[in-house]
Image (cartoon, rainbow, N blue to C red; front, side):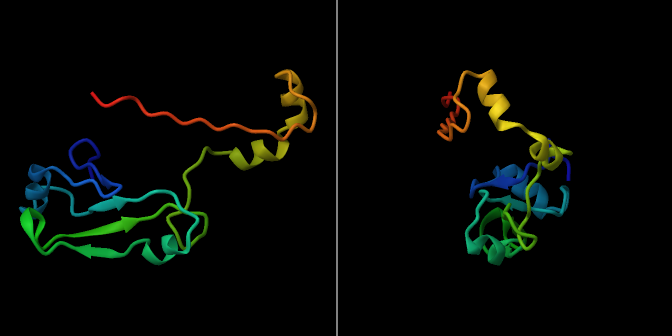
Length: 119
């Protein structure tokens, strides 16, 4: 699959009609993956790799498969940096906190996420 020419569908987004037609005509990669959100819910295991036959429209006759990233071997798993587990094992949280002006043992955390505005 050529990621530039044959992007995966993600989060229930529809592929462009031209991409669907290329797949239907056999001019494109045969794999059609619908990437879903990372989930720790039980449905991630049950739904990972399920086929989703397309019955109507330009994709009629094609089959996409769901890919559910997750936290168990029965899901799609997680992509992460090589060596992350070893880095985490050797991470000194109290030293990091001290270097950033936080009290030792401080457990307050803030997570912020942001998406660029649509243009």
